[in-house]
Length: 228
Image 1 (cartoon, one colour):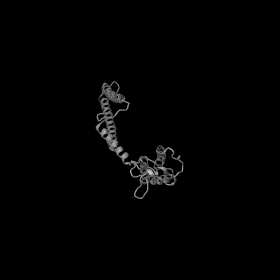
Image 2 (image 1 turned 90 degrees about the vertical axis):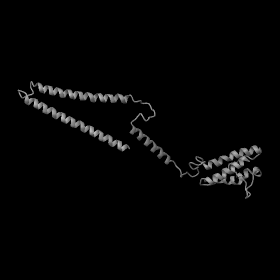
Image 3 (image 1 turned 45 degrees about the horizontal axis):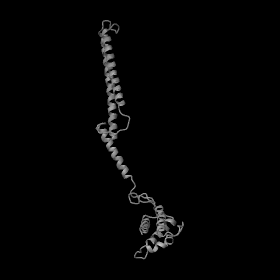
Image 4 (image 1 turned 135 degrees about the vertical axis):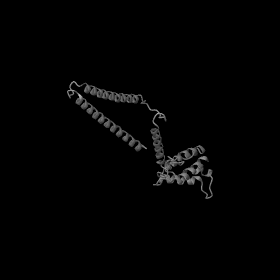
C-alpha cells in the first residue's frame, strides 16, 4: 500500500514538472515569434519605437507576474492551512484524513497488532519458572516453595506453642514431627509432610531448577498441611 502511494506521488510530481517545462517552452517560443513578427512588420524593421513589440512584451510580462502571483498565493494558502493543524495529540477520525490514508493507517495498525500477538512467547519457557499463559506464569518455583516453610512454621507454632524453632537446614520431616500425627495418610502410608519434605530438599540442594510437576506436588502438600 505504501509503495503504491509513493509511486503515485512520484509520477504526479514528474508529470507536474514536465507540464511546467513544456508550458514554459511554448510560451517562450510564442513570445519570440511574436516579437520577431512585430519587428519584421514595423516600418523601421526594428524594436526601436515599436509599439507592437512593447505591447507583446508587456502582455507576456503581465502573464508571468500573474502566474507567479497565483503560485505564491497557493503556497501561502497551503502554509496557512498547515499552520492551523493542531500540534497537540488527538485521535484521528475517518474524516480527518483522506480515505486512502485512513485505510493505510488501519491496515498498518492491524498488522502491528497481529505481529505483536504472534511474537508473544507461547511454547518457550525459562527453567525454574512458570510457563507463559499458565497459572504458574511469573512464578519462580524454588523461591515459592522455600517461602512456604516459614508460613507453615508460623501455623505450627499456633497449634503447638512450644514447637521447636526453625533451623536453616533442618529436614521438614524432622522439624514438623510433632504435627505428623495430625496429618492423614495416603494408600502408600505417606502423609503430605513426606511429599513436602522431598520437595523442599530438592529446592534446597538440587543443582537444577525444580520442574513444574515437582513444584505442583510440593505446593499441593504445603496447602494440605496449612489446611490441617
